[in-house]
Length: 304
Image (cartoon, rainbow, N blue to C red; front, side, top):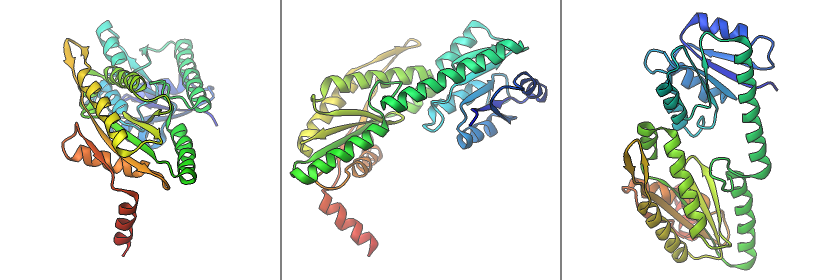
């Protein structure tokens, strides 16, 4: 099916002009006339490309882009800004927020079509490579699909061998606020640094994956809860000790962790529940999930 493009622009004249310029292209164009409806439509459609006007009433294009890049559902959708006043500072701000390109108004027909084609082609190739390799394009870690497949295999082995498999899940405390203040590029850099830290500290047999957003997961075969908690503590200490300077500000982060183990069922849901408790209890902490038997008894009690 043809790629879907979403235009977010408050000007009927620009909407008509973009339709005319892209007429004949193999794509489906949707239009939103303001930032809020554009955000809602982006979340619903999950388009392959967003053409975003900078100069809109509140929220303006920069704020719309910031919100798109802070949302797990829309953060990987490529954004191309449309603007009539593309100063260098404006371009830098847009790129820091995660935009891929700028197109200046009034549009040259050939230039607009070429940039749209190039962005769609790059997006398609990145998605294709990631799906085939099961590699997360941003961090270089294994992706969520690989996590599901590998964890299913490890749980099957645990049931046969009786040796536990433990999962650690984590995410930053307050990364969305960093993204709002400093831009998605800074948040992405922090996530890339965390990915490198995890890969350096885990055992050879451990599998580090990016589940979604800034949530990272480590599959630890033949590891007890105690051993995995020790690893989680080392990871937490390394995150807290790191820093990144952005716009003259020294950014330091902490992370929260959830840990669960199994010899029979999938431990990931219980690890995620433990992570939620760590967040609810103030963050920058490690929470362990109840044992499988306790979890099963609780579920039975809830049903009763």
